[in-house]
Amino acid sequence: MIYTVTLNPSVDFIVEVEDFQLDGLNRMSKEAKYPGGKGINVSRILKRIDVDNTALGFYGGFPGEFILDALRKEGVKADFIQVDEDSRINIKLKTGHETEINGLGPAISSDKMNDLIKKLEGLTESDILILSGSIPPSMPKDLYQEWTRSFAGKGISVVVDTSGKALLDVVKEHPFLVKPNHHELGELFDKKIDTADDAIHYGKILVEQGAQNVIVSMAGDGALLINKEEVYSATIPQGTVKNSTGAGDSLVAGFIGKWDQTKDLLQAFQYGVASGSATAFNYDLAEKQDIEALLPQVHITKI
Ligand SMILES: Nc1ncnc2c1ncn2[C@@H]1O[C@H](COP(=O)(O)OP(=O)(O)O)[C@@H](O)[C@H]1O
Ligand SMILES: O=P(O)(O)OC[C@H]1O[C@](O)(COP(=O)(O)O)[C@@H](O)[C@@H]1O
Image 1 (cartoon, rainbow, N blue to C red):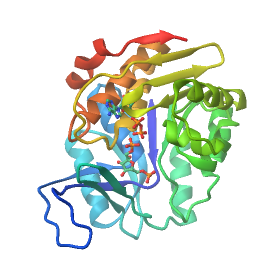
Image 2 (image 1 turned 45 degrees about the vertical axis):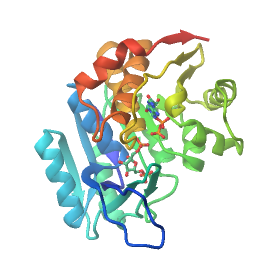
Image 3 (image 1 turned 180 degrees about the vertical axis):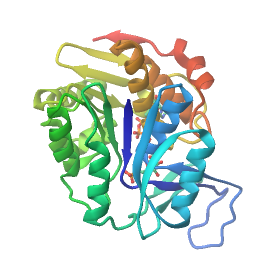
Image 4 (image 1 turned 60 degrees about the vertical axis):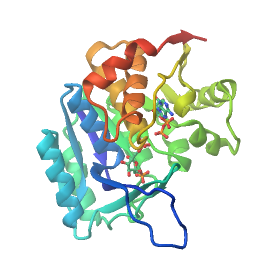
């Protein structure tokens, strides 16, 4: 079974404004609200591609109810722990540019954290654990590292999608997959990454430090899969970007879903990239048919 953990879920409030005025009154030309947070997005895509999974995490207040209700309507299995404060509302402002304003999220007490740990205690070797997104400020900063050490140590495949020091610390604990985008990868080494060669160079360092597989996504400019044995690059389908929120999460979901079904890394990589682009070309996350329509445009080459 695949479990996703979203410590800091969100309502993603997508707001479009034409001719945005910084100091003026702006009116929305289009708006939408979706359940968000990285693990939740992964679970929604997994469900859409028929991969059994359970979403875990914390929820609170009316945004939390919105998130759970939306997951219920889509048939996503969810087992969330209620907290006192409201789940966050993240603003995704579309003005011709994409600007994101993400909230801090509610405080999580150590009792609530222990409730979540209890839910994870039953995981076994055949399970996959996906830890995605920011860690709320009230929780230990090294939580992903601790959990990766503990669960990967039991033979569970752990996937971590995070950034900064949390990511650098996690790779030492041998996660099955990490997926920085090229900006996040550059940040780790204080370098600007503009080329695939640079991305390969720094991606390989994450592998040397312990990650089993590293996917470096570079938005519309390609993606790389790097492990101890090989490096592969993927072409990205052509299309019009409608809303790239959740594109990275869709890549992770497509990759892990296909890996779970086939144990074939290249098929998984191709499916992951098609999933990321299919979401970027849609307003909400992609549907299975959108993903599969893009597969012929994703060509994988060994480097
Ligand atoms: N402009 C784009 N055109 C086509 N596909 C895109 C575009 N932006 C993102 N994607 C798809 O989404 C994936 C993840 O996007 P990226 O922006 O690199 O990650 P993140 O969302 O984590 O920042 C890419 O590998 C690609 O498949
Ligand atoms: O936990 P963080 O890092 O604040 O990110 C949360 C945000 O990321 C998202 O999961 C989207 O992530 P990606 O665009 O990287 O796939 C949104 O749904 C959510 O608002």
